[in-house]
Length: 324
Image 1 (tube, one colour):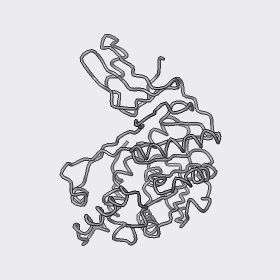
Image 2 (cartoon, helix red, strand yellow; image 1 turned 60 degrees about the vertical axis):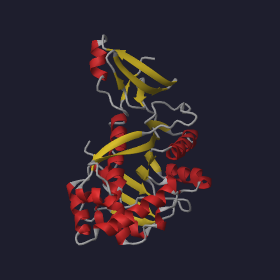
Image 3 (cartoon, rainbow, N blue to C red; image 1 turned 45 degrees about the vertical axis):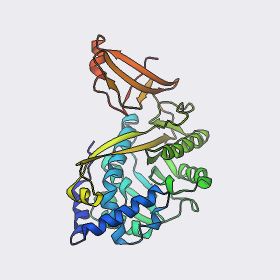
Image 4 (spheres, rainbow, N blue to C red; image 1 turned 120 degrees about the vertical axis):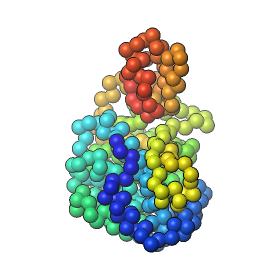
């Protein structure tokens, strides 16, 4: 999985940056980040092409990398899934659409919907030269007021945070109703982001959905209290990305929570998900796992040579066979 933006997409973004003040973009990016941290919707700060460019430069690399990681987990859990149609709900600049079409070559019809005209214009422009978007549509639609069109794959990435809590269950229900095969929801890897994902998970299971990832079961979520389930994706920063973020470290780690559900029953083969960084020590490796029976810390000794050889490089977010 390549977490960086496709070269053709980078070229389109670079064309937008030609002659644009990086300091102005940095100011706009800071305002966008502050608005998101305070719980405001994107419409408050992304109102024109300049602010959409600032978002694309400051946030799109990370949200794209996360979408690629999530879709890779979906493809791993359901290798026969080959969607031909995609609904990108709350598409922003089309980030999830680009990641999905990079993951599944079979996608031939893309529908991107958003309430923000600046985002829709940017999504349409960025997708103009990509053959995967030949049969695409950009529609202005409010997810908490109107039912979106149906597709085999429905994705809503960093969208639920902009939905009022009172309307969350309605929006999740409408997204599920629009799903012919698979629904994927992605949120920031924060306690609030996870809370929205867990609420959506409960509603979807009650509606008959089957959890594909990251959970390896449809049982109640075992995570309680102040803890939250999230993962992390590392990605490199370009020179412009460093400038607009006022950063000095040449990479960033984007934390995220997600849920992928299917209309078809899932064959899990006794799997468990690693839900935190494994701890490798002299005696062996400890793996924090989520299983159908709940949370579990598995220890594999170096003396278990064959098993240890397989698991010593296991990563946060991987699935392994559970021997519980």
